[in-house]
Image: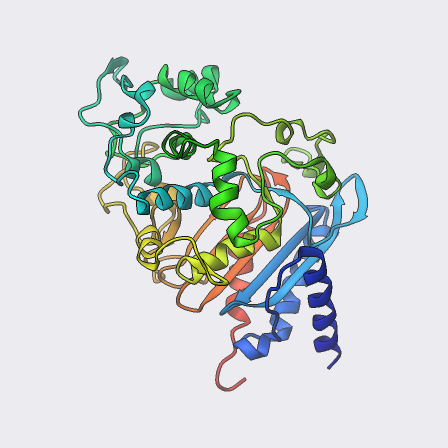
Length: 420
């Protein structure tokens, strides 16, 4: 009874803060245990107590009902104020699924096709070359929209300082572009790591998709997302530029010091990288809240619609969330198999990591799970078999923790059997 009263009070507060309604239910009503949900809170609190996290917000929902929504800890390691559920997080690469949805909306609009050459719309990239044995040569076939969505275009991030292409990326640094034109100019000078479609490699491909949305729609990327996605879905706290009146909810970022095994809060109180932004990074530029991102993921779980608003056709969501990589496709890292990057039993869809096989992997999962994460520790997964959405949010770069893996195990352990 007490647990139900607390849940009801939390729901009322949540509705009054966010201005729209999300359903809340006792976990047992949806086949999960209250004890299991409480364990998630205890689990995150343990990492806060150990000094590995300043704070964490977690959410679990099933069939659209929120069963667990908790904020644990404080805003920052140097900010003792309590973390709140409406805190603003840098979601970094969790921007990528949002951008992927945007490009699929334009495909549904008939503005482009998956296998269209990207240079048809972005002629600035028409003269890209591939670096092969020290020589830059024209690619045998063009980069397509599908290549961008599946990270098989040949772009990189420049993380491997022993790789000649990545060394060039580190010098040119397209991620630091001041606007879309500057981004394309920088990228056009860089070679591809491989022939488009030949390998899988994580890179700036989804940033290219963001620019592509701008070019085709004729609108700045931030405006397109606001008008076509965020406003229709009631996502009131998702943006590239954090408004002045919301900066108080914007969390500081942290980095884990592996040598000293300590958490450090970064001196980014002004958060300049998310103020007065001119290049709207489709690969990692968004700031959001737990409740907003839940609305986005719940739209996906429901097959492209939420609260009577249809964003995508159900068949489009199904297409996005199935594997699009051949088993023989190698990764650029070791040339053996894409499994080296995407973990054993996993594939990649049009913007999502997808579980293909649960027999040969550690940890809980359902076949068809799709997910992604951000470099500062935000993560989500959607289980279409169990109708579960789960999200975790922290702000820690280089975290030593496997939070998504551990939380998924806790959620699956909370599932009730007929004997419970």
